[in-house]
Length: 328
Image (cartoon, rainbow, N blue to C red; front, side, top):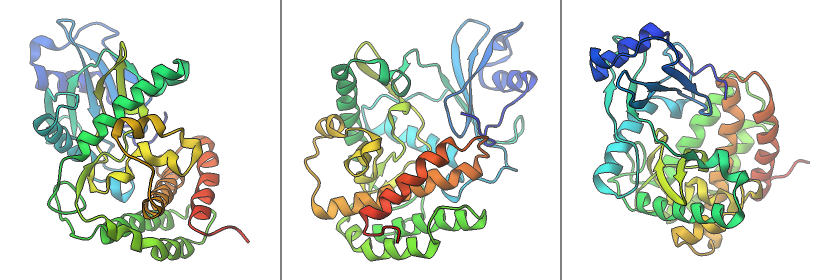
């Protein structure tokens, strides 16, 4: 996926970063030792073969001069914090961090190295798998997501604070950040921005049911899951995590918008039954938040085609309809 947030570096810069992380004796020579992993949407990631033949991944945050959405500020720091939490407090398979550098001495942004995961990306291969095999992976993902959500926070909001005791205040603030981002860049979301604000306010009471902050990934789609031989090998990309309502997790999205796929296997693995009426309202608010992001981020990412925008806009209308607003 092409995006102006991808902070590509020269071979000389990559060599300097490798030397800092692994030592001069591991700096590769010749050609063909670095290749870009192209399916990410935000950071640039390189698959690198060190001089001794070991393979690692280098992930680099966006350049400072590129404007990102409000919720994306400090994303790499969030990922490093989340990885530490998951490695320390769960059995969920996540990458180890070989080296992280936030000094901006060799590169104008944060970066870190991790081992290369020799496995298939579930999001890439899912369409080629027999239904039973794909469902089995989604069940495993549901179980892993439940374990992630078992971690409790002291307050709702960012992992490192400041937090808030009210999930309603935190989530409505998250939506407001997205709306302000859209207004600042003049993004056509197909609706009056204040109408969206009114819809959120009308249904915000459903958020008060959530009283215990839980660690949520929010971005845990199948494209962030590595699998091999019937097993979930590793979960990658943890830069969107925060303390919130587990129902906001990606695996539940299909309960309200069918185009996101059948959530049954995920929910079975998670151990979650049918949603209550209040839970459905919350999940519809979370769908609205997601679709706003998917529409508005196309401008921030500088997409060279309208494919994502054209897909997301009708789903934004659908999310609004689920909350009682249809076009006159």
